[in-house]
Image (cartoon, rainbow, N blue to C red; front, top):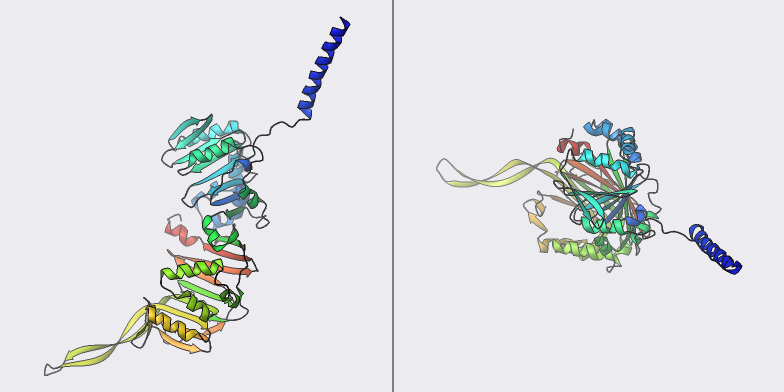
Length: 442
């Protein structure tokens, strides 16, 4: 009897010890984190909504946007608490070239999200569906979707929702995709509140390893800071000196480039060289001939109006009704146009090739590039100039590398800030007032 009792005690003690060890020493399976659920896309992003609201406040107030009261830090914080959304942490974005996009947001209390869904149903038709135990809501008119779990909410718009949903729902702890790991461990733009990371396959044609963009703003516009890293070296650098034009404020397009390209010329198999050559072939531009002749300066300016004297022959009748030809002059208003480039001793061969291909042609009292107005030509040392004004634009020293391009009434400005052996730093400035006016927002 004593032995049986002792055996039972030992068995019970062993079971207790096993349960104790299992409970306190054997790690239990962990739930997937938001970063584990993120799907792969062409562009990845993270945004801190509250900090972004602070940053853009002056822009919204200055332009007196009607929605400015609904995008303040205080309003968004209150809405987040009301609907159980944790806006103190980053929201993650994923976007594709075809327009499909989505976001994963952290929840502090998923029981409150139903309040938001009920409110949303007042403004949009919702259809709820359950697939594999996961419920989602479809906004039919917008082709948008909403799904939420214990600590996350998924917002998606596009045509590939079920695949994205399966990734989000079935993810396991520690299963974060490698491309997201690479993005989130980047040191660039660590302190920025909106950052995008390019995973776009087309960038591989240029042998680009990393491409990132970060948002900044002030009261007048937005800035998109850019960082690009190439796997192979950049065989060009910023030129220490050069000649260009002073930026004409009336110009719709202004390109001002000054690069040291001597090393670049010696690497025709470089990915950037190859891709630029392919693009040039589409318009019949002799890229290789241009690179052999080019010394690194290229300035193009278009915009504003200029008056040109145009000679023409008119047939008139004299008093005896005899036809005679008379040369007359008329004043034509044309688009302002000028181009300046530095060429080496092979410059004449490039010009001859342009004539041969019809990209440049001789006209009465001047020259024309395709559909350009009639142009005058001057040459000063290595600098070739073609211009529509009567007097050649004044050249000045310049080592800026910048582009101004007017599109639908808005002048976008890009500046190349810095070049290293493998990296490119630049900034795109976007003035918002004209965009807001064009879309009748202000």
